Length: 254
Image (cartoon, rainbow, N blue to C red; front, side, top):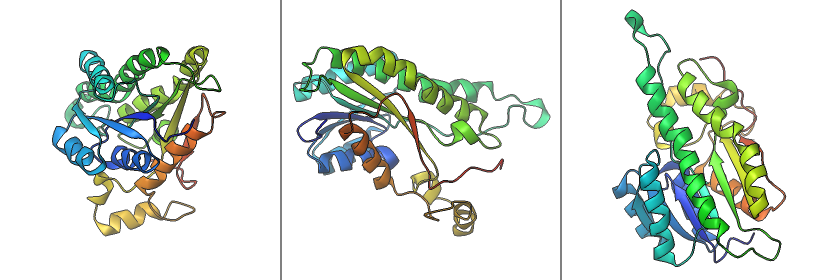
């Protein structure tokens, strides 16, 4: 699918990988709607790229339905490109000190990361189904964000790894189902990237982290994630799988 002229919907587009993706897609000629819980950040990115920002809690199905409809009303068409970057990365032991359990954190992480991704995919796919197919029969592509942690989750990442593992696991069945309507479903599993969370770490901590990355021996650049999104959009034979984007890193237990 050619990116130029298409409408893209990017969740979590107010910062980090989502913002980089929104910027990259606009650079390729797309129009972009940004769905983000932080409206101020979403507004700032939208103003910079000529996009449209909608405050959305992706874990709330009603808000997602309204946001997808609002984007369609604003641009006059449903999105053919959907990128789910919204997510949280809370960490906690399953059983912490003095026997404290992390059940609330687990539920919140699953709701935002996994259920949020499912919500957006569901409502966006329904809107895509009403679009006329392109010349090759394609109606759209949905790209979800997993994480390298789905395969090598670290100490304290049980909730995060479970949420990202769910995203990776539903990629193939979703692609098989939605393929009947000309909609592809892919997932990207990024490794360690320059995001606001990583940028807040002390230099010595960052150096220790990057020492485990074979090549390039550095943190990933958000623009490289945006580039991967664009490459998936443009390559019609990519479907139903999760691509690790990680410089060949394998995360240690801690």
